[in-house]
Length: 207
Length: 215
Image (cartoon, rainbow over all chains, first blue to last red; front, side, top):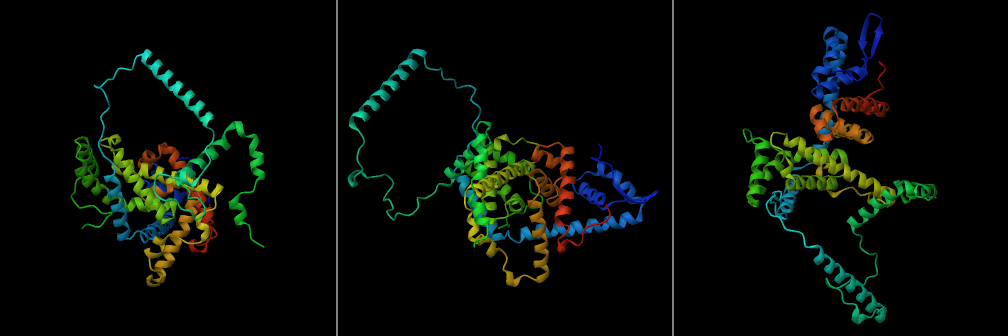
């Protein structure tokens, strides 16, 4: 196993010391359980009092910092919060059947014969043609209060903004991103760059 | 009742519990499977929430990511191989779930007005730690932790994952390799780059002392 790059040194020629960066790397390697890789650094640290003292300092500082980070996260994770989260997870699991389905090996259904498939396709095509024809004959139906019945209970008439479906929004944004990164639309990117973004406009200080 | 995020001493290992959940599921015993799986959830819930908070920084979204990850792990438990670490397998699901949310958030920020602009943090943040009862020293330490997390959040995606898992949560390079799918040497490169970048980012921060000179 090799280090990604040689150790960095400072100090007099013949009496070198590990740089701060190398000591940090040594600490990071030991933390990640890479004792074999760290051995090269450790060899020097064990024989150099100055580097050993500096390494202790790095180790203590890093441990304190790690404690600070985990403490700041743990302070936000209260037992009540974990309990609530646990309940939600269990409720969501109850919604699943949770049955592990084996890979189908024995049950085999023969595919319908080509003749049958052809008849089904023809019937579907006829239905479509009849439907289109009938639709043209009848023409557009004017909207009237009598026809305004919709399933799913009463509809709000407050005239406010339509409720936004987050999944639909997400899907839309993914599609926009994908469309912009596609090579076919790269001509539009210059145009996109010229268009102001909502977030940028909001970030700009108001007069 | 035992507090969440803890394990009973002498209790069967994660892998054995996961295997038992799988066999219950295969037998169609959903209730028993869920009860056992609840044990796994309790063991890993606190650490999972901490990891989600590192990535997402926002309590409500972190909670959702953790819930999604546990539900996803349960529904895909058939893919879990006996003999591998459940924690590593689950962390992979969790990290992917968090990264998906980070990406989605980036898209929303690009194309929509962020709800955060209203300037109101999650209600959970406000009730988590009452400020008036927090000692000053604890507050300062928390701030230092927050500053470091801010700097980590500015790292590129892979460097961030490597630092969080190996340096903060104490995973070995091999475990990080399993979680990320990267080679161990690549992880080492990301780790060293991340450390260098963090030192630069925090060099002028008074909470972290003066910039180092011995390079």
